[in-house]
Length: 195
Image (tube, rainbow, N blue to C red; front, side):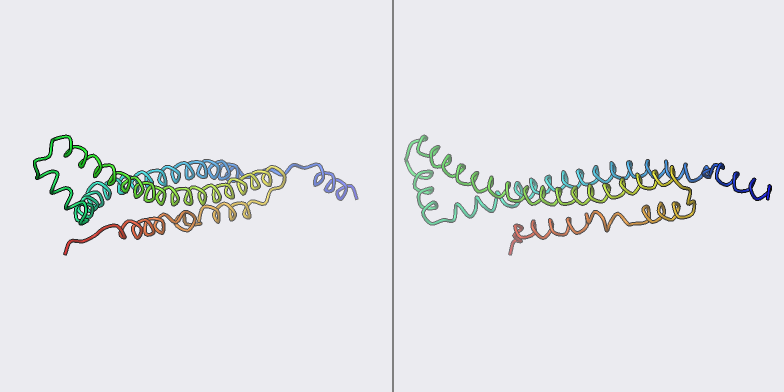
């Protein structure tokens, strides 16, 4: 009876100790979540910057020349331009014709620029939203694991949760390749190949 009472007292009054590896894994998980979040947000920002650069290149080397050619081929513009520039009109008349042409082309370029940059920004916001949602879930999971470690020891179950959290491929969470494909399709509509 004394040994049974001693056993009960030792069980009730005893402490549960955590394996050192569990605490280390939990700290490592917190650090990896934070670093992964930072890195992936930087990757998304880099991707968006690259997309904005591609839009500027597309506008400068493809769309602006196409708009100039299109504008010069309008019958009204072609006739007026030939009369004023090639005629005996004064230099101010030529300046006004060129100014009007530049303003018209600039308005179209500005509209295309806003549309294409808006597409890049929309994709960036979608990717950032997916990243924040994913890392919010990861951080909540980490807080739950930390709380569980502090209250009750379940060694292998925690390690399993940690491994599952780290095993989810980031390509599924932040679909950068899909966003790139959508942007490519959007930009390709504006590229005209010469015949």
